[in-house]
Length: 325
Image 1 (cartoon, rainbow, N blue to C red):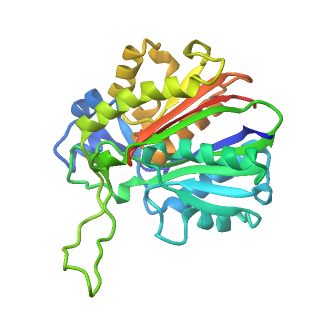
Image 2: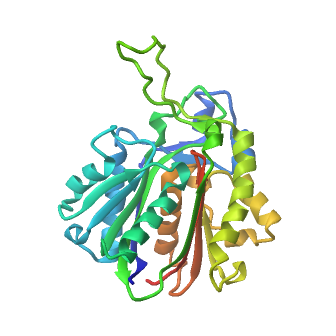
């Protein structure tokens, strides 16, 4: 049976930087209020590029890093909660932009856990021999579903995309994956879609597709589920947290990660953080962080990493991998 290894990474964020000071001009907030509660100081905001376009730009960089042509790709998986349209999928639009005509394409929706879920799906396709080279992308334009009058949510989110190319190999790459869902708590993080409105349904008022979040409940969920994810992704392996070089978490809130580090007795420096620059980019955040680490030269061959995400659904997941580049 094949193993799946990460052959290349890429990321893209829009040029427009929105600082906390910029937000002070449009909503009742302050840099001190935002940074002290979240660790976020700025985020990137699209000036018109939709999800497929930023996904394509991240994918091009990942293919370059993997030294692959788009025609080499068998499968494209895009994780997103902000697609260009209900159909066609973002992945199909990316296929066209890349010229990846040999690839099958589909999108997945797992909230901020999306990149982890995408890696898991790609791993299964490669292990079973159905694909040799898989492009996984997490991409979001969250600025189009943010209520810019809600100071509790508009300060959190940013736009961007992260990508990874996974390929079949005899080397050890993806070691273990754990995912889970708790749909009965879906109300804590929502983005409403179109209501049922046809000649046979009750008349309903339209509702805006804005992010709605119960921050207190998400904090409690995230801090518990991250620690559970570490345990579950390691328990069937010969590794422990002491063997892990870096933990790459979903970049949601510094307080969440700091709380987890303290409760799990993990050095906070083991967690790679860049949320101060990009905010919460949902499905894109882990991919962006992984690529940033790769480009900075922080990752060495055979380093053990844990990618861990949590988000709407509610969903969570973790990947234990050995860096093989």
